Length: 425
Image (cartoon, rainbow, N blue to C red; front, side, top):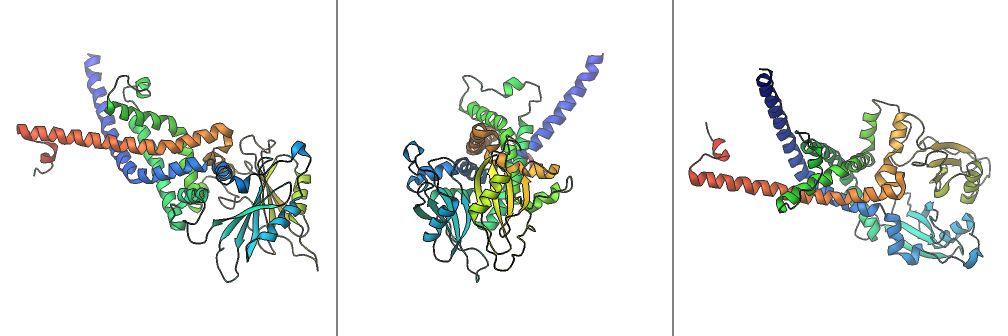
């Protein structure tokens, strides 16, 4: 008696779940068709972007790679010597913006110079200048940021811009951020659709043996989607943050205070150098570096931002500071360009819950939080995007053709079709 009463109820619940699943399937389908093509481009370029530093060195070894002196007989030249070498060849009207320290002993210093004109609201062309750390000789100059155009960029720069803004500037960055948010919904609805209502998880996670092309395509889509979801979700969310930081901050501030000024900097904008005393000259980049090294010897120097005007500060950035974190061990230090006073030290992964959450976004997006394992996983998640899109489109076309075939058979036999039913009064 009990069994006969409970079975209909179970059947009813299962029917409701199937109806909801059909709704989520439609959402997943149409979102996938809309955002999938763009996500394919962003995913592929993102896979390349994971290794963009290494790609620069591979594609331009004559600029980025240097010959190491035998038996370390020749020591590294001082940063002031390196800066002076870059200054001798800088393009007319350009100004030193930042320098990337060599990540390996056989890699050159990489300077960023932008053409700055007081009459222009924005920067002009941007250049890389590569300097040998042992000889302080310039390896070469590369036009890397041609103003207002993308086609004149080196391949790696072109890929990075395609990944960030689809070559559409700030509007493209906004579009990309919105599409990343929609992609998160698409991934989540895909997980809902994948969830086996019968509880047969093992079957839902494996390929069926000796299956035909239709089943293989379906299994490939659901399996790649499931195993990549844990990587895709944080990568997509961090993409939303980098493209729409103000909007993300508005939401995040509902849950936690945020001190981090923006998506790309940890030093507050109100941090300025104190007005210099009469005839006092600014300290050099090497002096700023030495001050930071004395205060914080842990970790590895990786970037130094030069003051952009008389009020700005030196920003010296270190990574692999294990005393902070093995995963996001970045330390940023602001140094007064006149007195050499350390005005601000920001250790990423500290502060409010909101600040810590935002500090994790770049390490997660790039995969650097987990070393080579993380970078490879992010690389694979980028490759998964075209796989999911292509298999999803194939699956949609297969079901569409199957439905058309069924309707054709019904018409031939005189049976009303689903299309006919939609025209009934």
